[in-house]
Image (tube, rainbow, N blue to C red):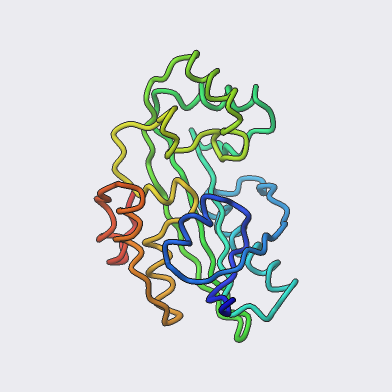
Length: 220
């Protein structure tokens, strides 16, 4: 097997799927860290702290990695963090809270090069409008077990439930890995991949914010 270009410090199948769009060889080495939020910690600070912590935890286990990529994603509603639900009942409760309203998804990423300790972080904050799905739809979706490993208890890409409507932000970020932010961060390590085009083709989504993100803007 060719030497990996980087190591992904996450076991998320969504992040593996999106990172595979680079066409690069990469290894998956999940990093376990304490994900408890600190009192009064803003969502953006929370996801950036966890992304960096995961990258450093991965380095501590094996400092031979050429480049480590770590990420974290959280859903926020009315200033509250909605992580992964622990039970089906908690998943249903989250989905009822989100129904018919807009919330924000914060995705932070960290790139760490163990050879010289250089760390780059980036943040994507995305507004997500949810449709007014019914209680019966919630019950059916929760019964599928799909919500249980996802922040906010939903997958934006789920074709059966399709919880989001009138979306106009970074689709990949809500899935867990903002690829345009990754692209602009990778450039600092002299790595190139045509991620914006591949992302849009893969997700079948004409992204209206890609150019702005690549230009360095903070968009929602």
